[in-house]
Length: 185
Image (cartoon, rainbow, N blue to C red; front, side, top):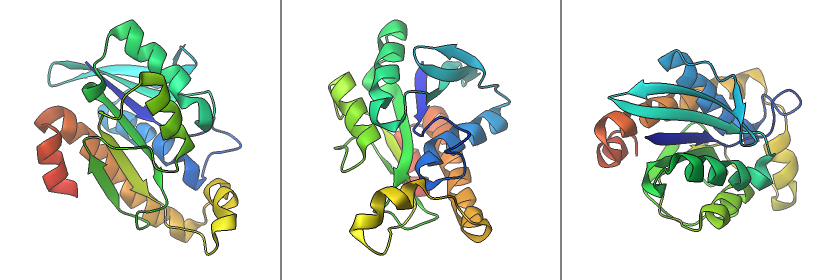
């Protein structure tokens, strides 16, 4: 069983912002696999499907970014999902806009959603897909930058990365993380 988690803030006010690349990717995966993200449990919206005989839960925590781990740990514990089968998808300012990076494990960096997950599940040993959003001109603008609405031109570039991240997630489940890393990194 896999738990695929897209990080973001509850949609509506926060939709179409750089900080919701994880939610946008979950929506794209759901579209590709014909899954409805409509069930509610453990502070999250989720949907379920099967890929290559593996049950897959697609999750969008509804806790706001900084408390994402609160939802993830409840799904992990309830379904007894090992950390190496939890895939986290999130925005990353250190990656060029429109590109993605897959890693098997690693620290949370400066991303508060990832800090919450690492703290909650008590390990850094889980795969992640980082969707590049680029950096603001000045470090002081980081919060405003990630929460800013995306214009049409930038949306096209980010949609390309979201589509790659969705395909990469499906490939991790079907072919394994090493093959996915070779294909997308």
